[in-house]
Length: 141
Image (cartoon, rainbow, N blue to C red; front, side):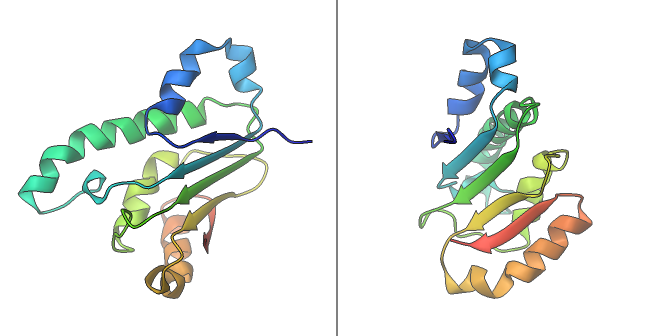
């Protein structure tokens, strides 16, 4: 039997991290992040979106730091769901750069929303991630 920790709120993992003993946190083996990231978390030329960008970016970076602190991690999946995540493929690798140093026994999985736009771009996103040093398998939900 495999226990999978699933986090669905942007601050859940960073808040969870300091609440348990470091050995237990490092002992976590399987994590799924299921989030509907709002588009304003990604860099934008839109002045209204840019107001929210820094706060959202900080949340995301702290979440990535918590994931990277899991020294025993064996599998990791980031599942971007819902209609909120509707960003261009060019922004996805930028968004995932904080996970660039995530090294587990095998590649981790990025699951994009089940939309034709992303289905057509899976290969391109995977190539761009590899060029940026992000070791993830990309697929559509």
